[in-house]
Image (cartoon, rainbow, N blue to C red; front, side):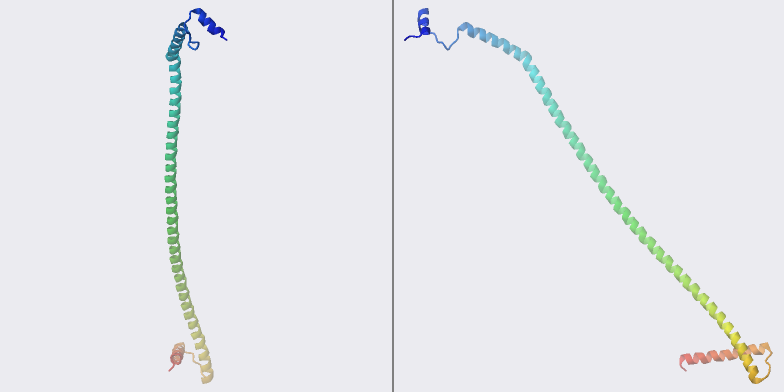
Length: 188
């Protein structure tokens, strides 16, 4: 059996025609169309495509650069914040130490002032006690002297009206009592 294509090919001239290869005029016109399309693609489409790609790459690179700058600024701001925080902590520590020192100084001054006031009050109290003691001793001597004169007048039976004589006698008597009291206190 022979195929109709083979019969046709044999009838046309007896040449061997390859059915897979197109005709020469098809190849020429296809090449011209591809060249024209390639020219327009190369002249108009490819530059626009490259422009869009370069614009996008610039945007991406610019965005990356801006992000890096923002990150560097943020890092710098963080370092400044940390430095300020460290300075603030040092200043707070200094203020606390100054306050502690001032408090100790004030406390020491208050203690010194209180001790001085206490010493003054104690000295004033001793002076008042000595003055009162002297006053009481003087009053007691006078009372003792009057009592002794009254007793002596009753014992002797005469009046000791001479004040000078009476004062001398009273003083002598009291001096003797003081010396006897001092001798007995010292153990003689």
